[in-house]
Image (cartoon, rainbow, N blue to C red; front, side):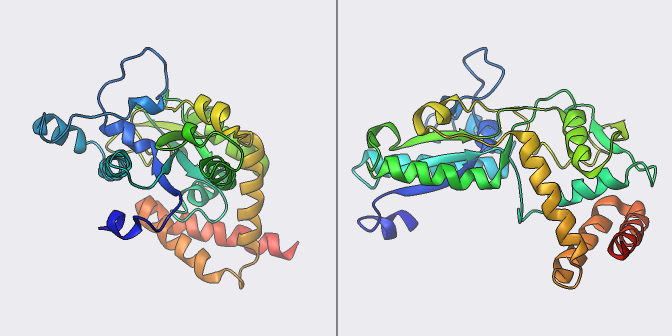
Length: 284
């Protein structure tokens, strides 16, 4: 229905998809350690409905995103409006609305003081993680529009094309935790191995592993922020938010509720420890 409404009313459509599409795709046909845009392929409903259903079960979000991509391509091939798909990886950044990075930021700060180590999921801990910094998404949108509308040449190179977006660095869970700890003065982040059915994992949120961004770098001339620089920027943002208590009281209280729900019986002491530390910081 949305496609019929948009037809003849848009010059270019930018669709925000995700790396979850690779979780519901067929096995890769190459030996690269990361997913290429061309890997997002699955059997059609008419050809192999059972295989498609089995893949769908791996990720609800991936299934929804890929179905949208398939419908956009179908209408484009039938003479419809042009579009560009941007596939985001594990998203983090200021105001990221799942607040999972905010939760991880606080857990890293508390892990030593509360003897509450971060979990390394034994099924994922060696898996490189692709991460997408939110300000870099805006840059990619601008570049896609500019090329898609032929303002900077070669619209045919982006119409109906997908582009993976992520930082170039691909840390595993342990390295990511250490990266997050550095700008908040945590030289050591305590971790513990945990089984998949007991671990609390905020990153990664996919199973297929990292993505290649070579296509976005070459075709869009996109330039992502280095991961360490992005993490420092996000750390400063959340530190400021937490100190401006009255201005962001609702958001902070919502985060505390999420912590309690996420951490179970450890949640209340986690929240109280965080509150106490912030009181001391505001005094100084």
